[in-house]
Image (cartoon, rainbow, N blue to C red; front, side):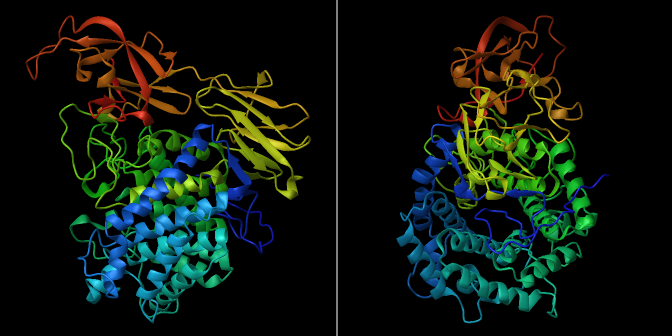
Length: 626
């Protein structure tokens, strides 16, 4: 396996970039600050980001009070007599919401949430113990479990989210109050389980690793990077009490450098990989880089849903075997897609190549976008690719999006990703400005590339034309998606380099990139047993689906078959596909019918991310061909 990792190091930055992953020792690829990329509110990504600010973040703040997350803090210090509510890691939802607010401050400079931040952070400070410990479930419900059950207590996971929020808030608003709280807890963990401690300990739910690297980037103190490496180096030694779930569930079955397949709880694996890749970015560890390349191939070439979702098993919220991708029983947790967005961005910074940005684009426009409704206030936890007409609702897999969950990890996670979305649109790649996600935007060019502003005009993905203008002489690298068969720049073939980017130099006239958005049929690998004899329809980065609500009366979605000899046709608001309805059969098993289908007709297919907004009736992405 060829391993590509950072070999070129630039001088250590004295001022961290205001971005969610900004290496302190950057290589040839480095991110731009969140406020340096301003999304057009009329573009799809820009509209989603604006909705997040106006609706999703305020909704999360409201729900933290309704669901009891903040009362859990108050009860520890006698400011509330309410019973504990939520899961034992409910504190993390508070911190994820603070991080979402921090990135919104970075993006717009808003002061709308200042009073809430003041109250919430002051509350956390009152709850924190003199030695730095802070986790309300342990303090108020099970003090005897403090650092005793790292497999399940989520103490390090909660600290990771607190730390990420604290660093983002200090960078965005220049306020250290939460960071001071987080540092005391970090130092306690380091003194208890760090390289100089007598005991070794790592969390059952990875998340702290990437947060510690970000703290190192923010402060420049090696202590935090050393703690990260210490935890990664020891993971896989079997120190967690795994019980019936097994060590693979916790990614504790093998050393990280020897764990080459994505296994176990999907969110945990992907968060761990993000942290490991952060360490690669800072230290260039070849063995860890090789493991991450193998992990990426395992997760994305054999275990990813077409929508950019992960986790094929409801039991343990886990990855399944290679090519185990059932549509109707897909768990496909929203947080897994979010974790993978974080990981892919770090893999791009470490390795380069369009496949990472293309994966992020697939995830944003499909699995992540489908996880919330048009209002931005109701959410899916699980994101199946098929909803049967008679499927029952489960707690985390309901038929309809809900305003909140008992385990509410996904809604505030969604909020923080959309708030920081600008960070993934473009970056510096060597001597060029690389554009990864196509959306209307203004992008500030770093001074070392000559300064100025690049403007991107497009209605993508509704239209395939992207216009890029900016300072004459600026080199730009434009991602050419693998699904386009006829991409042109200024009328000539785009001819991307081996990394999937077409490089051009701007002139006084805008560059016109044209991507072929013709709808296309897609088949799955023949090893995906659940999808044999089925096709999906895609257009650009979007996956489409058919809902029961768009079929004629008397026709069940379960009965239709598609005619792939006829290409899908673009219509206003979606696509049209040629289908026919099978004649219903009473027998569960029978010989193949000579005439299986009735008269053909056309059915509307809609973007997957819009499904479930009109009804909770049946839906499916993969459509039978016979």
